[in-house]
Length: 250
Image (cartoon, rainbow, N blue to C red; front, top):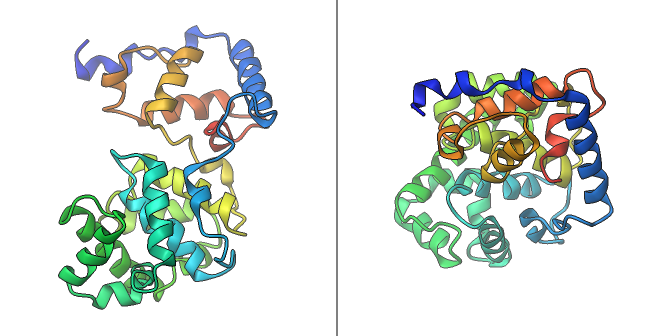
């Protein structure tokens, strides 16, 4: 299968929508009953001492997310928790402090508990996102949501379109949507138009989407165009009571 033929080979018209929706409903029910595992998620490593309403909470859940690619998520968030509880390392979760740090100092702090694994790329990403929060949102990522009136469509426009280059990896399709999901779960934030938060098409979601019959194709080819996966879920769940991101964990 050639890469430029992948999208054409996804034919969502061939599956039985009613049957797939029944399977999705069953999966959600099974997950709620604890039959699928996943009771403990990577972000559950968040230190309980963090005030849910504080900027610390929002920044703790934001900055490591930008490094959450091609690595074990559980290990990443455990490392982030250790760094947060380390008095010397805690500064890395304050964008205004990070923005003024030398690269060498930031590198030392990020590597101490292995929050960063790549001494150059990860450090640069962390500082670029921090500087963007300082520049665009007055050092507080919560101001993004206030500016956008908590509307997912507006938040997407700000981060993924207007300021995409200012948020490396965090603005990417997969991580961005999962980050919004984490904001809902681990902060008091309530979004408008939350149906606009798409399934975050990681490898597990791609595999599940194939098994459920929503799309067809080779998993490696599909991974090169993950929006096809999220589009398939959006089409399936349109005009139902299920919001795409709510099927992510189940």
